[in-house]
Image (cartoon, rainbow over all chains, first blue to last red; front, side):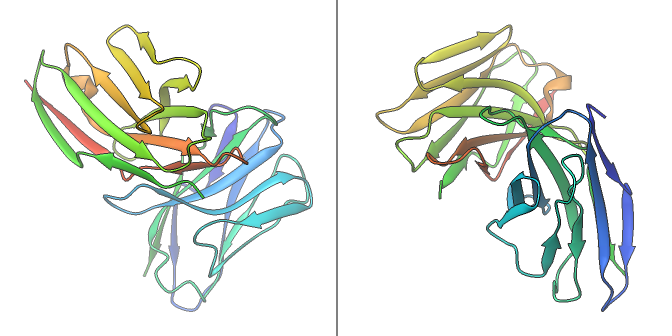
Length: 112
Length: 112
């Protein structure tokens, strides 16, 4: 998976439930990002983190939360406040001072 | 932040013909412009990128051109093949950050 592992590959969420998507990287990258992709649309930034214990909101952070307790890990929680969570979620990382994302293989979340 | 617009949204070409996708960006200080290819259900893969100090870059059948004055950059695929069928995304960073803003994507279909 190019050094970034996302799990699970498929996830089903019931109404009112919180779910957590995992993103782990062994590339020693400092910065990590979460994007959401809807059919026929581009990637929209949810949250990002440039160093451990620090993260910033992206363009569509409402209804989501993150943590960055370890350099290797950047989990995303989709809360019940996110009313339309069905989408493909992509995690990415880059080294400090460089461009060119490495993406994980994605998690497809569906509300049932 | 950066605003990236991409055209066309869909593109159908005959095998062997060329395909061109154009993107415009808003932040005149942006200095890095990648192109990603995403096959159905897969992660985006970086296929080519260009920095603001050059006007063109080629890699086999793929080329990217950049016009900083007009704030647009284009992807050119020559001698298209069926395996070129995918969704292509352009992106650009804000001038003060490394996070990327993505275009909405172009679905390219190569007809055999």
